[in-house]
Length: 264
Image 1 (cartoon, helix red, strand yellow):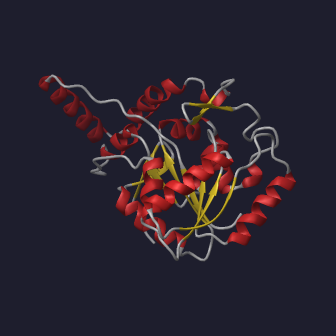
Image 2: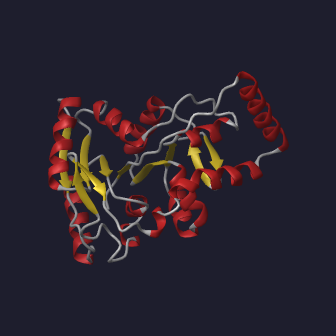
């Protein structure tokens, strides 16, 4: 299967929409091997660029789609022709709605209450959905015994899709290799708090989150330096046109969600 991608600062991002990404995901789910899919916003790209280990993790995904508008703009500078991002949570909703039985779904991450809410919403989206299991991992360091139990539960359920929700870069690392998350780094107690019926990050802020607002600026500078002369002229022309029209570039928002298929 050929997936059209564009390299953005070392990460191969697919030129996809919600519908075309869905078709690829269905094809990947039919593969006789585990496959992996994830969204990428500017924070993920910054992590991959400045952390070689995380960059190698991102190389192992079968499909990485553009989760933020700055990523879309970077793709469009090289001819992608996209009009919108593929936002992780919206894609999850789109996929759940369009994969009734015999597709089998498994949810991993967050609290039991959130998982129950997610199951209820999934059934509302697709009454014929087949949810074969879920795991709310402990909010502490995971042990080898925990990981073995996760794998046994998922293997026994035999899902087509494992939908993963973990914070920061932990989600991507766990999807590719559960053992890559060392004890003491996985969702420690007190990392999240309940606020307005949602779980939100409560700190202390880990190093990977600091300077998040600088990610887009750093990546923009890095990316522009890698543009060809023709691409640089195209950017200059576009900026000149925007100034003449009195317009300004919109700011994009980012989101994170993950989906993987296969047994752990």
